[in-house]
Image (cartoon, rainbow, N blue to C red):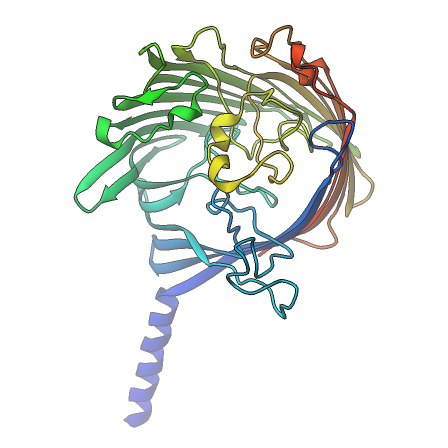
Length: 468
């Protein structure tokens, strides 16, 4: 009798353990970057740094179709402007960060400064036959990732998340997901900024066709609009609430010999900020980006390319901000649109560097926090598979300014960049990459009558990652 009871108890415990389990995934990476002369000046001063980062993603399987997903960022960056990114910790971070040795002096230290563990995601996902429920802080991604990019690449440094309540309806190849996202809330009593989002996605894998629509309306009342006037070139004072709309359209088509992807985004609305002349500043900007691939197939060669136009702000229309800034994860080169270069904010990306006054970051001591804006670019690439483990890749990037009115007599030519990359994959889920980028800056970096330097610049990057 006792043996039967013991067998029954073990059986019940094993069934409970199988029903509730934790599935762990994650990734680790280390990287080093060296930029010869970020200022493009004759008297160069190089920029060098290394980063270290680990993220863990436990998924609690509570029952059939019920998952609780979270993400822990280990060795995250402590700088205020970067602490919510996935840049990672600077290798060599000492005890004394410039605060007069508040944590001890580097000269006599015996250990490194400890890093904070951050929780960047936590959400409930309930799946069943006809759709899924999503509640919590979850990653957001759409299309090519030019606007909404969750940063799922091995070497992505940024990530998009939202506090959402969403239900995704699925009928055959079509899905529809209405979503409410709480952008911010001051306290338990209120003071909110919200996103109202609709996502429609058509995905026919058999035909290799996909299309999607992402519509987002962001709103906040006068008391809860924290749009910084300094983020807008002509901004003077914040006087009212904000309401903006972002509409993204995505198209994808795959054939055996060619793949094509296209995403267009349009940003409009009212910022709630006024100019010195008491004129309300509106948003009216756009971006169109396309990608194409000729798959290698049985060949060792693969051809691909990226091209796009991204609107820039026209200083002559102070009541309208026309600048569109792509997500910082969307890169086309090692240097161009990736690291801050030159003088005078030639591109017009100051809105995403709004924390610089507090953090003290500049082109000389910032990470690769630049983005694509106010530009037309073309970036063809070719990849050669030397063997099963080694790929060689070359990319040429050419770009011009869309709007060159920031300075008198300003030119549009941003220059030409050549990138070479060696990718080594010694085993599954392990990647080591070394790249060299050489930029021959165009006349745009001279800033018209300012006569800034535009000397040739090069950058070296080497990085390794493992996912599990």
